[in-house]
Length: 90
Image (cartoon, rainbow, N blue to C red):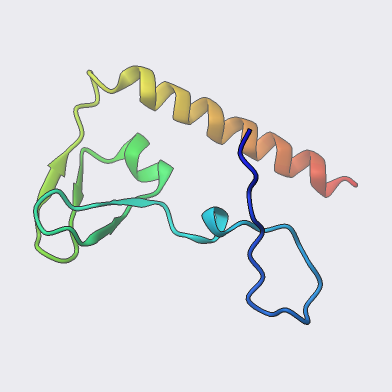
């Protein structure tokens, strides 16, 4: 079991349980230049390619071969929306 450390940039502020992982934008390093490519789940689900903002490399998303992963992302997104709706009722 991993022990996740909470990150609090303001030691005097109340602890809110946000981890460093949750604060970082989603994305990946560019295989060509190593720069960070920000990528959202929505982009992976809907776009046919992702562009590196640093060197312009275009990464094509093979929607057919990626279908199982894309379907899993869609299910995760829906679960996240359902959770958000339920938590607003509390």
